[in-house]
Image (cartoon, rainbow, N blue to C red; front, side, top):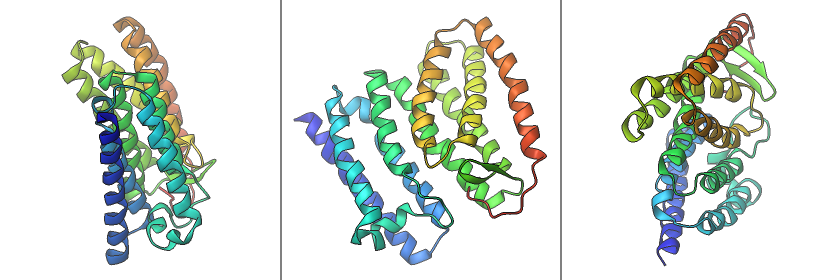
Length: 258
């Protein structure tokens, strides 16, 4: 019974979120990508209590079965002109980002089981870091670079890096038994790796890659010694600097997608 109540509660929250953002878009006409990322933030924060609401995997699967077809229907039926407008962005290639979002959360819950910390950090990365990349890229992006999914910005990627660092460092520092220097190195290592993954993700697949790969990297790093973490970081930093340098030297004039 408690699992069903949790499912109903999350569905009510998601429905209210779609309704509110639909009203916001009709009333204020913001940039479509801003509305989409506000949806992602709301969906991510709504999923944070999942480890405490559900004690088995099946409620997460039920949510996927309900929400994935519903989100797809919003793109393809008459509802597209109302709620479906929240999911679409100007100039974007066809993307199933919201579907991947739901699948990524369900897959993450399956992988993490009853470990709220390992679940919460990837969800925060998905909800906040990915959104920060888009919102900062739209508002402040000046240095553009081309990916498989079109145009992105260096400023957006750096916003992802900074936000991801705090999404990892904060929870590890507060809720794990790791030493502060270990949490610092892990946060820096993972944020650099995930920044590069987000930069090359296409067609909304970052919504699947970030939580799943984020968990795998986090789980692996938490089992390493501080020396092993530092060695991995020593290899990753030059790679990230090289990647950033390549992006800085790329000059494009097309309008940013993110």
